[in-house]
Length: 248
Image 1: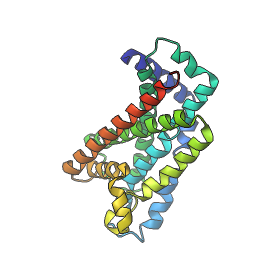
Image 2: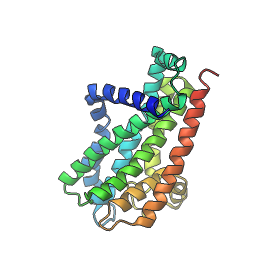
Image 3: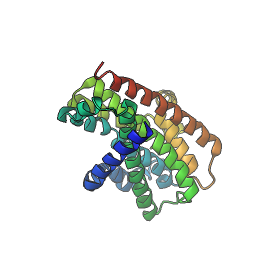
């Protein structure tokens, strides 16, 4: 299974490197938020350094925008007959799913690093310590796996590109707004604070924020990392189950 996963992952990465503009395209909206909205909201949100506060939220936004397209590419492979060929081959079905979500997660890590560098060039004092950045990227990787798996599961359940894109678009911004990604939790309305408790984005943002702080908060980071492990495991199991139903 590991050999199959690596082979397929390598294939997807080669395809991505041949089309670098597509990966850059998914960075447009997070960059707009970072460059424009950080300047606008900074005057209204009571945070010591709003740019530093917002950067982890923008990193998580990058994950959502990037990983939500994973299911779309799966549907296109199904339409092209590529998946049918895989299903009749000896390739492990688990490897097919794992390779897809890992490819998506690695992509969003690369995109998140670009966002982090742009933020630093704009004057953010977010920690660029390699160990702390690695801690943050681990959370981003797990969230990327989770949402890529979710996107693939929805793709198989819906079997159509249009509703999948619509669900992806409808989920992304509400998940961001119903968390502390853009606004400190204490300034959120009470009912949004309640929703944020069950929102995985809340814990991902807080974990990345804790990792990239001047002094990392290991308790907050550990809690967020554990929740991301659970989230990625559950969504990955669902995606594998959904994929197994394709020919059952």
